[in-house]
Image (cartoon, rainbow over all chains, first blue to last red; front, side, top):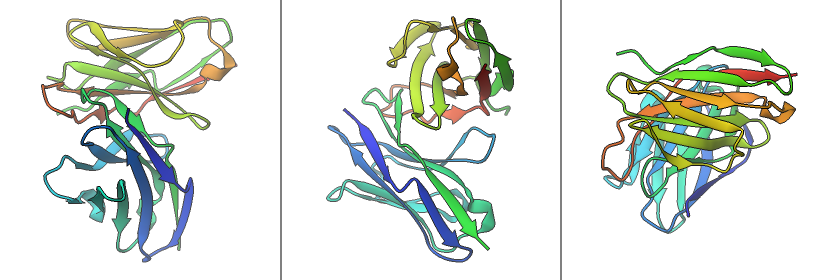
Length: 113
Length: 115
C-alpha cells in the first residue's frame, strides 16, 4: 500500500529564507511521487514529479525536491521564499496502477514579509 | 488547450437533498477522477472513470456515485446530503496510458455547502 506523511501542517518562513516542506512516503513498490500546490479557491497545480529518472527533481517557480530512498523522503525546497509562495502544498504518491493518488494532509506555507 | 472545467463552482444545499456536479476533462483525456477535500480529512479519492466505466473506487458510501459520458465528461452525484458532505470536490483528468503513473490535471473544484 502507498501513503505519504507530511510533517508540519503549518510552516512559516520569512521572505527570502529557505523553504523546506517535508514528505515521507511508504510504498511497497518503487514510488512515483508528486508535489502539488493549491492557492486559495483554486484546484491543485503540479509543482514537480519524481519518476525515477533523477533523484533531484526541479519543478516550477524555483522549487525542487530530492528523492532519498534510504530515508523514504521526498522533501520540497526553495532557496528563497517569495510572498507569492504562500499556499497549501500537498505531497502525493501514485497507486501501482498509476491512476489513483494518495495525498498527504498538506502543509500550509506562510511567508512573512 | 483548455484546462479541466468544473460546474458549478459553488453550491448550497440542505440536508436530505441531492446534488450533481459536472467535470469536463482536458481534450483528449479519457480518465476522470474525483476527490473530496475537507479540512479534517484532507484530499480523499472518490472514484475514477475511464471509457465510461468506473475503474477505481475509494472508501465512500453508496450515496456517492458517478458516471462518465462518451465524450469523457463526468458527473458525480451525492444523494441524501449530510452536513459532513460539505467540502471542495475536485476533478482531475489524465490520459490514462499504460504507464506506471499518470499525471493528473486538476480543475478548480466545486465548493459544496450543506446546511
